[in-house]
Length: 154
Image (cartoon, rainbow, N blue to C red; front, side, top):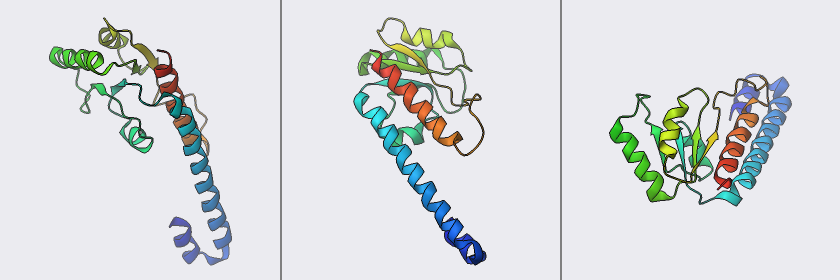
């Protein structure tokens, strides 16, 4: 769609726009296949995320979290919320809690207490990634890899 609009406005460079769009589509399709290959061996394993920030990833790759410690408003979870999460860990057989380096690890330790679940680290900010055309694919690979490693560890 973008390539078509650019081509209409700038027909001299139409071939370049269309080629770049095709290349971009092919790269995204290859990334999706790579992530599916990473996640397929661990599908069905239950995990909880630190906060509910991965819904698009979960939906796109059909790999949904059993819950989130923090709800979307980023307020500290109440004792009742922590008890609810502890119940979800036990009820769903959660094997992994994905923590984030920016937040309180003590809260994750509380959620893990009394279970065999492991803690994994996922960094949604990934400030160590290089800016450029590979930023998005690297971030998606990081998320898939962190999730697969954590749920596989059990």
